[in-house]
Length: 124
Image (cartoon, rainbow, N blue to C red; front, side, top):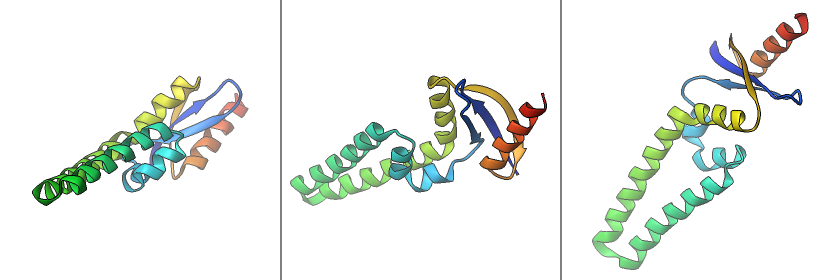
């Protein structure tokens, strides 16, 4: 079971965000950013990676090795950053888009958390 925060929009749309570590954000960093409609941040990150790689290729030699090491370290750091904060970033994004936090539930997956919230609100 996981803990989920359930958000609802005035138009009736409901979203549930799992609390804690985000494996999709950690493992699929760029793809995850594009799927979550954060394309511009994904593009900026890709440009940064390619820029480091390009500097290393142009300068060659030891700079290339240093560039590769820095790019790898940056990539791992960014993966960890998104893994730890990805779900919280999604929450902030929902709040900016007009969603409101409605409840927190313990459930086995996102869809069941939404169903639980909808059942509770239908009874009220």
